[in-house]
Amino acid sequence: MKKSDETASRDATLLDRLAREAANLTARERELADVLSRGYPHVLLESATALAARHGTSASTVVRLFAKLGYTSYADAQREARAGVTAMLPTAGQRAPATIGGKRTLRACVDDALLHDQHNLAATRESLDLAAFEAVARLLAGPRGRLFVLAQKNSAPVGAWLALHLNMCRPRVQELGSGAVTATDAMLWVEPDDVLLTFSIRRYSAAPVQIARVFRKCGARVVAICDSPAAPLVPLSDHHLLVRTTNASPFDSYTAAFFLCNALVSAVAQLRHPDVIEALQRRDTLWEAFEADLDEGMCRD
Image 1: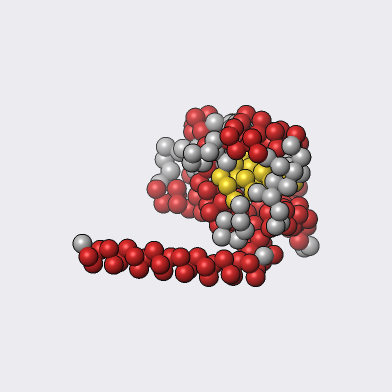
Image 2: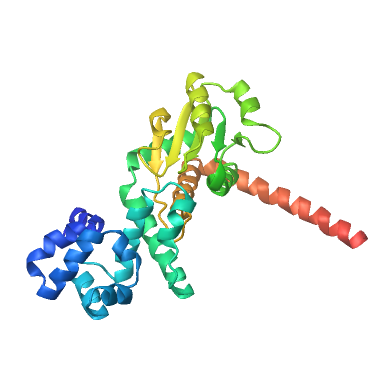
């Protein structure tokens, strides 16, 4: 099977798989398939044992059916179902009833988190527009202008990590709205050579959209990292990159966002490698000086 066929098969929903395998199902499996078709995706939010007991079959029949449909496990099908349910629900409060299982063990919480993040990483990589990624990396590595990083709400830790590491790779990196300089004050001096890198993960905030419009009006470039091509920042961006954020809990997962930012930092460092090596060596020297001063002061005390 070619890679594109494998990806298509992996991305097929339960309903797609049931339709594809309908002729190969046993009578008992067809009865279960009918239940799944009518109740999908919510029917998969309970365990295989509970599903079997509710519909008069055995857990082994449930497990065999999902193996025949091409799932690696029943848990993988549940991950897909949770993603389908939560994709329609914008807030953690709305997603909580569908993602917090009353009978789920704490070990299952660990396994579910791993399963979702593995899928988020794979899906983000497989759907990555490499031409857009390269364009963004070259834009971030450019020698002219300032780079502003804007991340609000739950994206803030990712934005702070990205700004911290890009600052080691190039000069004039600033977290927009961080510290004493507010976004409004910083935008007084936006110039055409500047770049805004901003995040847009649901629930979508109005501020990044308004700030992106100011940058565009000033002739500056806008890069957006989003969770959907329908995010309101996409039409305002020169380039956008997408990340998957589905999770087994009510809260979005930012593992794939960190992966994408890690890849961007690596690409910028590669593009600027002589300058980055020199900058990191200067950073080591600065750290040695500060640590020496601190050690001497502690000894005197």
